[in-house]
Image 1 (cartoon, chains in turn green, purple):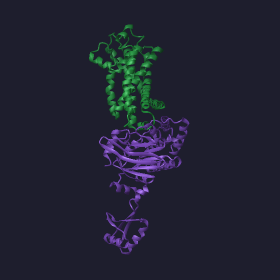
Image 2 (tube, helix red, strand yellow):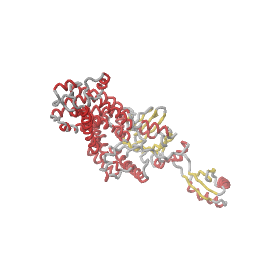
Image 3 (spheres, chains in turn yellow, purple):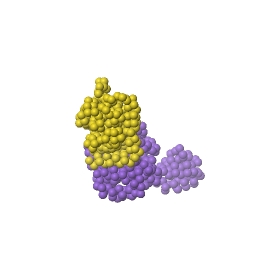
Image 4 (cartoon, one colour):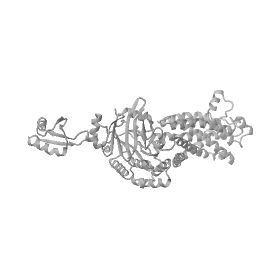
Length: 259
Length: 333
């Protein structure tokens, strides 16, 4: 337990020391919202299939998800960095159980991603979507689960790879389809079969689905969310937890293997 | 005296390459033990095996009383390691690096604060303990790593090429700390080096080449296997001088690339006699050079070649299986 906390503490210390990184990652969601929201909504003006909310508000939950995924996947790279720059040896030669080390990495990555996610919540008010305390609590819960899923995925990729370049290639290759097929930019109802399959194996789809249901709960027309959702929020979260286990177990196993 | 490190037929392969083979060592508590060998000879692999970072392919090893393969966590609790490559977090301060170490080794906080202050003073970093490590020079980093390796009071301290790439002043300083440590704490030190003069200062030295142990003894005993001193004599008339020394001094001179080479039991005492003899016979002596046997000569005798003195790249590191494999394969044969 103390090893897990130690790993977590170090990564958080490093994160909080790196001010420029926090600022850039704050600007990111704003940029996405401006581009997707403004750019695409001008294209879609007149269509009213989004339950009465503007396109920017529709996209906003997806941007929360994207911010968390982005942060989590790029935080998990620290495992690769630690290996590359030697610090991992210090950890591996210590009596800390490998399981605690791996879980510490997941905990720190998730915390950092969650923090970044929470920082996107004030945007809701800017978009005319005031959130109640209950909504905020629900959103934080969903974001925490998504952050854990993405960090575990990042850890899994990083245990399979040696170099930093390799990690970046894989992550960039994963990130776009994960985002584009998450339903962030368009409703998932009525997609062709093959695309529907891809959506169903995409954890981001369940996260976006859950986040949107909570964010738009008061703003959208009553029938819209029920008709366009994948699952109720609780089931979405359960599926996400399933993804977490599926990514975490092989990642921890690979991490624990002695060379 | 008790045995702290014991290996039996220890071996490790990387694919087809045998990096370490049939290694039998027995190291006593409090010993300063050097593993000497060329780059790629199997030193880092041996340290990897003894510190549980690598799994043995054959044989067994016990460190601090625990088996490295079946009780790695216990072994890790009792050892400190200074790696060949860098292993500090550059973004954290010196103190924070030690703090991380203390926490992950579960040290009581008061003990940590006391030990950290003592060790930072020992390695002369107390004044810069709150600076991030990225501001530190290579020598400062190495000193901090040494302090960190000792923080949790290990029974055995492993140092893999602790002085590679350091300036002579820092190298001397590191050796000074190690000497002080042995006197105060009685800690067992296992170090690898390819600097022969460092191996000279150890209690016992093992020479490893091509993954195999080729000698193991005190530096004095290893040198004694070579016989006596060697005189290199440069003269005007090599043939006449050779004849004269053979008949009048009962020596067996050989013709070397640079004059005569004579093995003698006690070099410094024989020089005046040899010079007087040649001088008296009208043979001009241009230079006399005395070579006392060193571990370098032992090494050449055992392996048939000189130890290479090139420095290892800092990127050479444990935990990078592919790199180790390639490096071990590339060097030393």
